[in-house]
Image (cartoon, rainbow, N blue to C red; front, top):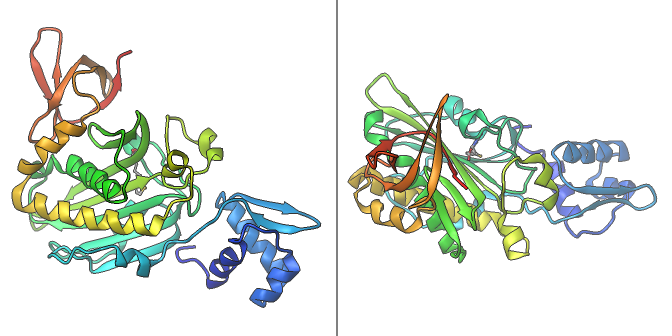
Length: 329
Ligand code: BTN
């Protein structure tokens, strides 16, 4: 369901009081049959929304579900520069927001398109992994930018996006214990809070199409633990209260647009100091998976191209542009 049906949105609003509602009372409030209510509830269950149903009492939402709202998101975007997006689209359920923007938005050079989805049926992570998020829990955001630069000039972008996410979290007053694990995982106390998937492709007129995908764990319920195979955290678990996705999404878009503009104008020059401050791997012993081969060494920071500097057995420092780093314990 690319866009959520107005009935489903109303149903979620009714259930948001956390109380039990009978199928009959919901049907009456929405002017539809009990059977239609049951179908909508089933849809939500398929989306992995935590709904309790009891024969005598009806249905109850186990945790609040405040949907994304374009108007509220826009209130938190103060950026007015040249990258202000033509379009910010809020989707219901989609395969992947990155894929959606690849095929669906108009693209003139320097035009930015942004979309967010409540649910992704085939959300993608790095290294061909899947990215999991129950309906309405987190932020799944993609941004498309066609830039008149060659791919070779864009290698530091991944880290710039990671800094943009950090900045947005800071503005949300969430500052401590955050780090960036090269190239662009956002960690809180070593556990994954956000992931970034940047995909680039050369376009015919010398430009590059960039799709930036950001997945940020906001209100991920503890029940998601079994569905994810890495150590993760969500803002809700850390702060022990339900968090405002609309505000965070607005701050995120705001920060992303500022960072993209600065990157376009100055390259990575003014970002390198910040990378150093947040570098989770700095001076740690690690293994870097490179396809079939591994490289081992001590991380010695990141260069201006955003490449990881690894000091290896012969003390020589080599810059790596890609790979998956894990700490050598
Ligand atoms: C990773 O850490 O492996 C990157 C995860 C990126 C997930 C986001 S969610 C929005 C966008 N759409 C996708 O399919 N993936 C990215």
